[in-house]
Amino acid sequence: MPTAGNWLTEAAEVELLDCTLRDGSYAVDFQFDEAFVVNLLSRLNETPISKIEIGHGLGLEAERTGIAACNIDHQRWCEIADSTLTNKPWGMFVQPAFTQLSTVAELSSRGMSFIRVGMEPDKVGENLDYLMRSADVCERVYLNLMKSSATPVQQLLGMLDSVSSIVSGVYVVDSCGTMLPTDVQSYVTAVRECFPVVGFHGHDNLGMANCNSIAAMQAGATVLDGTLNGIGRGSGNAAIESLAGIIKILDTDRFDYQEMARLAEYCRENMDVISEDRAMQVLGAVLGVHSASFPLVDQLAAEYRIDPARLMEAAAGIAEHSPRVADFHAAAVGIADEAGLRRQVSV
Image (cartoon, rainbow, N blue to C red):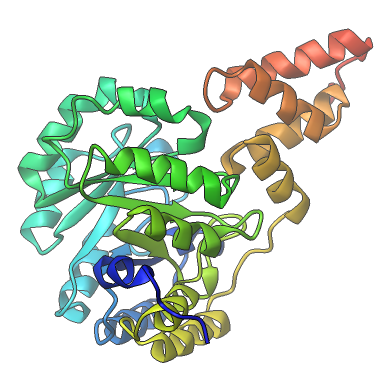
C-alpha cells in the first residue's frame, strides 16, 4: 500500500472541480437530455466535490458566434442549478469575444458564484478591462490560460503582471493534451509563486491527464478539474473519479471516490459520446495543435494534397504561440510550393 508521505498537505488543500456538464458538452454536440442533467446535478450536490461548472462547452453565449447552441440555454441552466445545487457553488466558462458581462451579472444575481475566463496568455493584456469588469459583477473570477504550454513559462508570467489584484486564481490549461508531468510541474510552480490559487485543467490526448493533474497538485495547484469517466472535448479530460480514488490512496477519502465511480458509470451509460479521430488527437498533442483546428487541417490537407501531420508541424513552426488560421494556410501553400503540388479545387 503506498504511503501518503509529503502528499498529505497537498491532498488536504486540493479542491476538485467537476466540469462534466461543460467540457463534456463537446462530446455530445452540446445536446443533453435534461432529465439526465437534473439527476446528475442532484447527485453531485450530495458529494464532497468542491465546485460544479455547467453550460456550453465553448462558453456562455457561444452561440452568438454562430456555433451550435446548447439545447439547454443559459437561463434554463441557471434554473436547473438553482433547484439542484443547493450545497455547491456553480459557475460557467466565458470568453471575452462573445460573453456579455450583462449576462454574467444577471446569472450572478441568480446564484452563479464563479466564472472562468478563457483566453490564450498573449491575449491577457488586451482583455484586462474585461477581467476587471468581470470581477465587478461576479464573486469569483478565475483566469484560464488556454493552450498554456504554447507560451514559454517565463513569457507567460510576464503576461500576467497586471492581473494579480483582479482574479481569484489562475489556471494552467493543457488544451492540446501535450504536456508531460515535468512540464506541468514547471508551469504550476512558476505561476504559484505569483498567485496563491492555481488550478490545472488537463486533456487526455496522450493519456497523461490524470498523471498531470497529480503532478500539478504536487507542485502546489489547489484546484484540479475533472470530468466523470473523463468525458470531454476530443480525447477527454482527467477522470474525476480516478482523481478522487488517487487522493484516497495518498491520503484519505475526501471526495467519496465510490460514489464518483458510480456517477462515472451513470454518465458512460447515458451520454451518447461522439467518436473521436484518435490519430488526429495524438498528432495534435505531439505537434501542439488544438483539436479546434482539425477540420481546417483536414480541409487544407485535401485541397493541397499534403500530409496532415506535415501541415500541422509546419504551422506550429510558423506560429509565434499556438497555430492560427493564417499559419495553417501559409504552411499549406509553402509545402505545396516546395513540392510542386497543385491545389485540388472542387468543381
